Length: 204
Image (cartoon, rainbow, N blue to C red; front, side, top):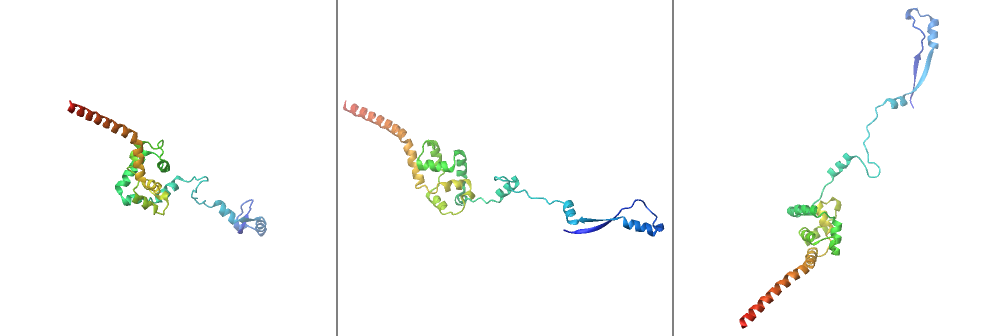
């Protein structure tokens, strides 16, 4: 702590400097008051405060500008765009229409859950799922899946499903089989009747 001594002169009335007597000078000297001031405290009291950067709030909050800056700095990786730009675009559009999470789609395919994935959804999904070579591409990728673009995260989620396209094709056939059977059975019945008519007509 820095202390400096200031002399404060306390005077009761003004006097002409030329006419001051020794006794008056003596009185003034006696009337001086010595005050010790804490210079460090004064500097702290009157200094201009520094602007503090806003940090993150507790509980995961934070400044919106900081969040936007982090998003802007985050690099999005797209293996699919590098591999096939057109497919990347088509998958992006298709996923926006499906409105289901990658985990839900993955589990529904593995369990062949017809309540979760209806026939019309499967027919659409069949166009967007990765091929075997594309699955292999994502199985060999060792980066963070959170850094991937949306279509790439979809491919990444399905990378470990064996025979993915064949599984979907057979699943679709299984669902469509009753209707296909009815249609073809009707056609066979019509052919049989036509055959019988031609056969008996030729005999008469």
